[in-house]
Length: 598
Image (cartoon, rainbow, N blue to C red; front, side):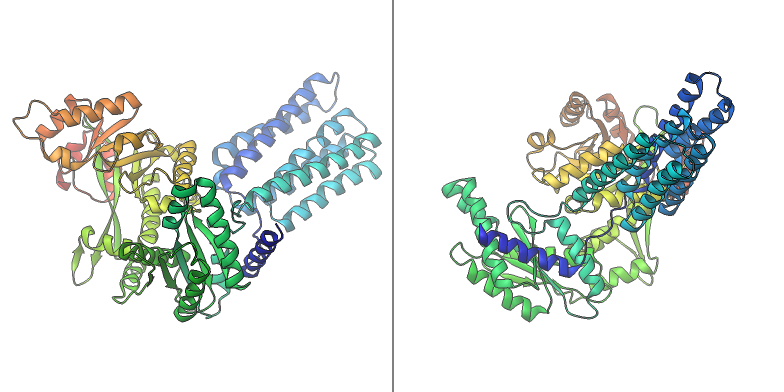
């Protein structure tokens, strides 16, 4: 037990050296909803007080203030997510001012007590969302108001004032502790190491503070060791193996090296040094784990200008190659062809664009949305096929940067489409991207910045690349669906164990792979595979979208078997988002509006 505490202390110390814990500030959406509830509650309290207190001289004024509070609550619920954090700060202190006026004008009346009882709600909001400095300032304002109301204005009974001080203190302490405890849940319970969320925090701080000092990220895969231990002696033995490895590694690595649990059977090591120092450390870690066996590892060095996403992507690419080679092998990521630099420069120079392929209602032929697709127009070379640059982006780790840029761009474009016409924009996302700790926040931010309702975004996940066993990925999907974002499973039927996996994948839409559509012939009267997929989708309550539809007879067969939507050159080739917006706004079917885009 003493050894475990010592190991955890060393890990915690290493994590703290890489950077302090950040302030807890929630998203605009959460703050807007919470403040809307507070304002609506305050408005209802005001109305009830005004109507229940007989012969109240200030009833008209109270009703006006209550009406303003109710209207403010409704506006915050609808539009508050667009406000800045600074606006919520101003809102809190303005509310303190309004309550101060109420207490001052209603001295000694029950109405003053009713106004003062709203202060705990304000305290709860402040401690849930504000950083420490703003929290202290707001606490001072709230407690100062109670003191002034009691000693200067005699607006409250002594017992009420004392109770309010105690209640506000307890509410502040409990709310602040709960929120910060949730935000700081960054430790793996089994090993005591930082988990992936903790690693992301440490990496951000380390990259910001390195000042030219070499930093190298190594990823270690011990899956084979864990599987062997579990097969021989059961799951408990696998956990014991991981714990034993961690104790040995922490002792060997020392306090300046951060070790984190990256996945179920993988670890990350952040080394303050270059390739040689990392290679030497990995040799010592392998020696410490020699009784259990060897493991593959991938490393990537940070270069000036590299983002966190690129660094982790490079390390994952190196680890993937080490796994492919097999054995006790270390692969160092080397971008010898300058692929990452080339793609990054192209994105910065505006050479990438997002085009939109129409998605059409199969029965009525009306446009229902579009799929966002990345295109690279390289000066002097023309259009670079996605089949060429996408694999390079995936191998180099640039794909995450590109995916997030496409997401933000597509959300902004879709937000410009007519809001009174149902529509959606579909954006591709890899299974590896879903496994990133901040992907949920990335999607929420993209929606909020664009002002796009969540139910107008569809995230398309390729079934063959989504790890249905990844708890993190599945949890992200469930959280996003909770917001209203829809999930589509792409290329359905071409992956492995599709039917056995489907019930575990949170999904709303099945996309029928183009290979099934291409097999349809003009003389076909039956399409058993299409029939089976659409029947399965109906049973599961899912919509179906067929890809690669190029001929009218294909659309006719798909429509016969109940396919909901189609996309392909029959409906229009990928084009500018404004054309999609015009088609949505017009009264014509998509084939008439987009005829020039085919």
